[in-house]
Image (cartoon, rainbow, N blue to C red; front, side):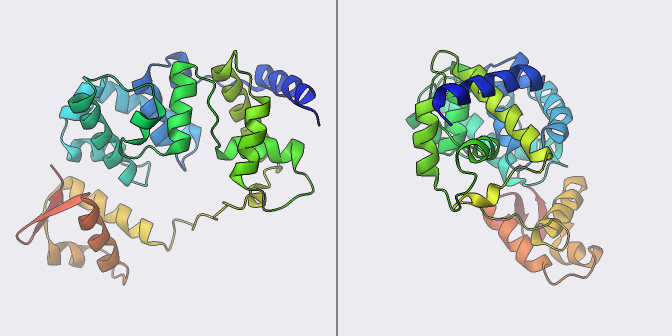
Length: 266
């Protein structure tokens, strides 16, 4: 398929499949930053109510930076992958301390913030600042695989980025990427994802039976009150993953220990 035909099809699907989202109605960089961290490995339908709660609780980057991590984790609870909340909190504090409360509009500055990698930085630059940058995300991969790599396996992101660079609408990058995202989401629902074509693909382990499941239970318990380490272990269902999960959460700073008492990081 040539680039012109591809662009025409994407724009047609963009108009047909457009999804209304709070961070599209308001493309303020803070809105987009929060939404991008929440959307990592979490579906839009699950994110929207949590996003609205989060923004009503922490309406500005300054209010988020000033809040204790324990409050941030409590509001985040239910989204999973709680390290994202910690990264977001750290990023907000850095924005206030080093960027005068203004989320930066350059790639190098964005990737210096906690939790922001190359593709998240690209999304912020495209969605908030309407910059024609190149970035790759699962839905974007899905669209390009569907149109350009039907009979090819193990496609690298380098190959994809070259193609994205050739086809991006540089006059309307924000809306272009929205269209790609909505089209990719549609294709996945039709069973046309084939994300396993990517050489970067790693299948996500199911929550049930994983260490992540135990981490979630620990965080939920400690969010309610402080625990002695043994008390928490006794209250939790017997599980050999408990020590591994708790050790990791302490190392990551999601939970703190004062003496024998475990509590959410302040």
